[in-house]
Amino acid sequence: MGHEFSGVVYAVGEGVDDLKVGQHVVVEPYIIRDDVPTGEGSNYHLSKDMNFIGLGGCGGGLAEKIAVKRRWVHPISDKIPLDQAALIEPLSVGHHAYVRSGAKAGDVALVGGAGPIGLLLAAVLKAKGIKVIITELSKARKDKARESGVADYILDPSEVDVVEEVKKLTNGEGVDVAFECTSVNKVLDTMVEACRPTAKVVIVSIWSHPATINVHSVVMKELDVRGTIAYCNDHAETIKLVEEGKINLEPFITQRIKLDELISEGFERLIHNNESAVKIIVNPNL
Image 1 (cartoon, rainbow, N blue to C red):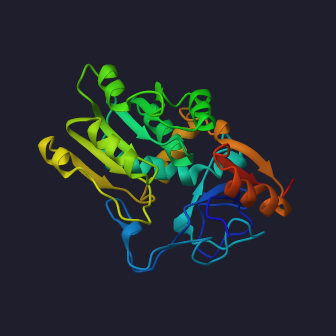
Image 2: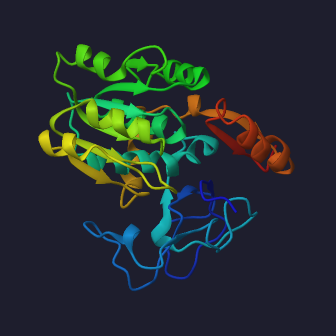
């Protein structure tokens, strides 16, 4: 169990000469068949039978020790504390969504939802020179977006007409790219309507239920609707952004708990009070 994790190299296998014992690392937690290409330009994250360490077997980050293939181990410098390094995995989800969007410096982006992925995606966008508008209902999540500095504007759909406010902020044009991060249909509708012509809508959240979309708006504005899942050759750039100080992960750690508190302070909090929690770090050494 546990697919978002960092650690220290305990031992290296035969033929591994670019990692050393004691080195700090993060894991790109894929379980992928050995015959799948994983180089630049590949789409290994979409390969048949793809799964994740900690979700689909092979142990996980909550284990004392875990064996991981060299391909999926990424060294990090001492500039990134190990607890913050555990957030490299979800940050890479945000980075992949950014890559899928094709957004560039100077663009304006609308992020629908300030949950963990929405916030970390916004952090990537800000680091890339993109102006960020976040729409969110929850006070706790709005506060976190504000204190972490990942949003230029925060709009509450219970207080304002988000589409109209977006138009005011973009000289009547709409945003260049919108990211749906909630799996809520009303938010998806807002993303579509808030876009300027030829903009991109990126669906980041995983939907377990059918969705509807205003196809007329998509057609008449020639919108490009794209999906995104996980990450693919994103970790190196994500680590670089953190090591260079362009992204500070500390604000997104809302609690640190012991391993024996995993149920009472971890899962229970996420089930019953998840609005106030962004990322809860489990530290076996506490």
